[in-house]
Amino acid sequence: QPYAIPALAPEVVEVAFAGHTIRIQRHAAGQQSRGVHCAIWPAAWKLIDTLAQLDSTSSKGLWKSKRVLELGSGTGIVGMCAALLGAAATVTDLHTDVLQTNVRQNSITGPGSLRVECLDFASAQDL
Image 1 (tube, rainbow, N blue to C red):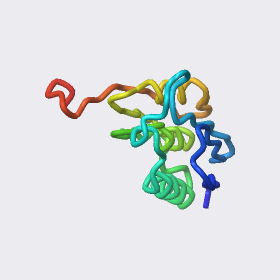
Image 2: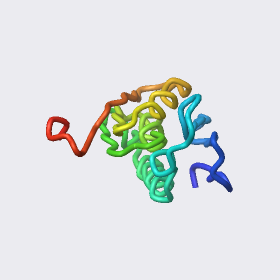
Image 3: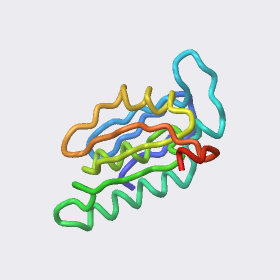
Image 4: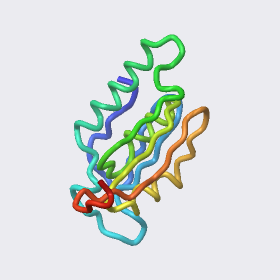
């Protein structure tokens, strides 16, 4: 496994990934956690594992110069991991406060980049 899964779901989660420590806040400063929006689901851990495995099998780094769009990003941890592997990642959610907080406190170094966008699936304009 290229990361260590925290035993519990504290308000702040630190994950070691690709030689970096990612610090994930599950809520924005001064706000209570919104449950579903701020959870790091088991599928996110599996996707992070898959990103790393695919990258490790590529001689030049599979995700370098690729574009990744994460829908319903919640905390943004998957998009951050993709960016650390070299992708130009866009993370989206209806509530972007947690995403913005996490992107600000985690600098993405190297060829990858990370951008936050608001996306409302109930809005025809957004779709």
